Amino acid sequence: MEDAGSSELVIIARAVKPRGLKGELVAELLTDFPDRFEDVEELVLVSPKGERRAGRIENYWFQNNRVVLKLAGYDDVEAAKELVGFEFAVPESERVPLPSDHYYDWELEGCSVKVGSESIGKIQSVIRTGGTEILAIADEHGKEFLIPLVDSIVVEIDTAAKTIVVDPPEGLLDL
Image (cartoon, rainbow, N blue to C red; front, side, top):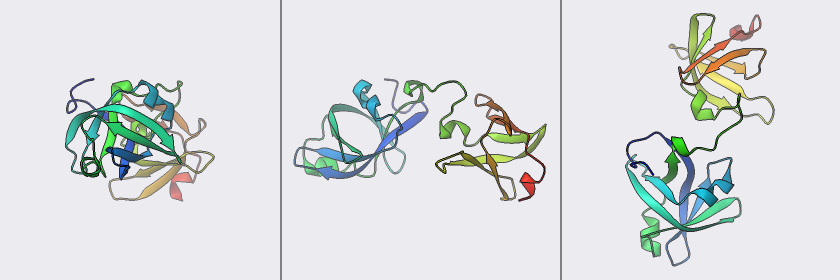
């Protein structure tokens, strides 16, 4: 694994509470790919203050839509309590690849959104409705726009350049 402090990270879980007497942690899953734990031996542990350190998974299993992790060097309840609130991450280079034309929310967040060459703001978040995703965009004055993430409106996504071009139907930006 790369140095724990040198790369962009993808958060895959967050410690919620200790479990048992042997230093195990119950963690909320923050990945759409829980089976990825099969291939992960090392994690970057990110404290609530943003401090990073490396950690090694000794064991894991799933329980009630959460993952229970046993990390090396955390062998009792007191040691495990120290990690409550920590996020567990992998380097961005180890993210699960998506099919073309599919993006992680974090790849879209912060992108500049343009109508032609005119910027209308930056993506603040991706809203999941159970149907079509919605891009929540804010301009420099804080005005918010909601644009459906559909091919007929979102005509170009360039995550490398952090730019998205949209062709909204008349009136959409006036709502």
